[in-house]
Amino acid sequence: MHTKIAIIGAGVIGLTSAIKLQENGFDVTIFARDIQENIASRAAPAFWIPYKAAPEEAVLKWAKESLSVYQHFGKDIGVELLPYQEFHAHPIDLPWWAKIVTDYDDIQLPHLPLGFTVGYAAKLYRIDSSIYVDYLIRRFQKQNGMLHQMAFQHLDNVPSEFQIIINCCGVSSSTFVNDPDSYPIRGQFLLTEKPEGFNTITFTSVNNDGYTLIVPRTNDCYIGGTTNEGDWNMTPDASTSTQILNRATAIVPALAGVNILKTGVGLRPGRKTVRVQTEKLNDQRTVVHNYGHGGAGFTISWGCADEVVKLVQQI
Ligand SMILES: Cc1cc2nc3c(=O)[nH]c(=O)nc-3n(C[C@H](O)[C@H](O)[C@H](O)COP(=O)(O)OP(=O)(O)OC[C@H]3O[C@@H](n4cnc5c(N)ncnc54)[C@H](O)[C@@H]3O)c2cc1C
Image 1 (cartoon, helix red, strand yellow):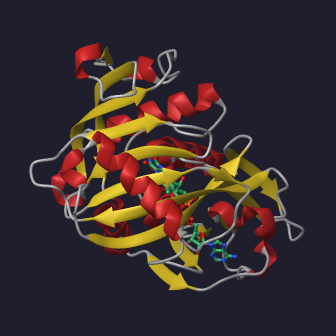
Image 2: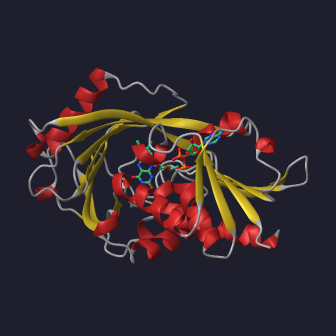
């Protein structure tokens, strides 16, 4: 008889874990409170960048493993290798993760926008969440996976027919499993029409609260954003949206006057370190936690899912 596994969460982490477990012979059912809305995975642009996730060594390993998976995906599911440019007002060291991106290079002064003194360029994978998350759901369901919209108060409430539980509840971990190390990292963003011919992921550091991120996607353009640690507010602030758009337009003038399709907020599941770890429940069932991926859930999802499979195989 196959071991029956319940996964809590239908974000990128729950879905990727589910697919990897199915492909290793397990019978997997997903339970999720939210599927289409109100989850980090639907609020991310997203692209491959190990942002606000720790510890460094494990994140690098998972990011590298995930990169090797994205290399086999294509535009039909929202994955595309795009030019990337990064600008800073003050000198900074190369990002700690740059060593796994082969073509990282300096951008010289004449090519920097006004007000910036340092720039880097590379090619990075864009993983368009508006297409990719639904692809993961289809792949899971095609492999006979069941997805139920249902919330649990506690892990103990998961029906006893499931011998193993995988907890991929994202930012809810602070209450769902009372994890004091978990916290939200609020990100406000806009979706606009895509300016004709614009296809470069663009990132600038500004200050502790606001940065500019422009991610051209398949059918729209994502503009961020903010990183407010500990802020649970899901309502977009109008003046913040104006500031985000003004900053982005200063870098990419083609954004001036584009139609705004949506303003939104997402909560990155922040944690001191990503938690991929087993724990015994009172009823002796085992839970494997997989949460706390910060701003890098898409970037490290496949590597973390491999680790979950290894932990399940050891049970
Ligand atoms: C603005 C923003 C920009 C980002 N940009 C990027 C990027 O460019 N690249 C990148 O790699 N990452 C990015 N991220 C981070 C990435 O989106 C997250 O790390 C990732 O989505 C986390 O996935 P998750 O599945 O853990 O959580 P979520 O997607 O939040 O999913 C959690 C799931 O658990 C369910 N759940 C929670 N509690 C319960 C319960 N009690 N019972 C049942 N179900 C429950 C929820 O309903 C949901 O289905 C960004 C995030 C934000 C917000």
